[in-house]
Length: 125
Image (cartoon, rainbow, N blue to C red; front, side):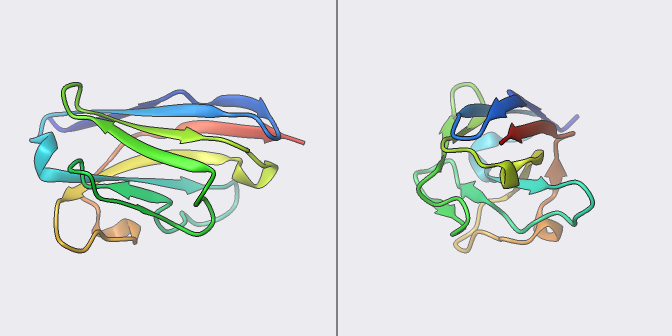
């Protein structure tokens, strides 16, 4: 059974940091790229925030570049999202998702095959 399980969300003050984890199982981790997405209350799910192909290649959306860092631990089948300098507008449910690794890493949610249940991040001003 394919599973992606996010953890690490919580409430933090503006300017603070959080590290989210995405633990994967049920598929060959090294053959997949993992992306992080978010959905704010009352809004649609955004395009991808960042992606790792689990082989050294990463991508960051402009909205998080310089503040968020994605990394992976292939031995643990886990991807991390370190978020620094959090802002109230970062408040959302954060999801990780998996897609077969390809030369071009997809940025839109519908291209991803597997999704986690999400973890809530709330940033107070």
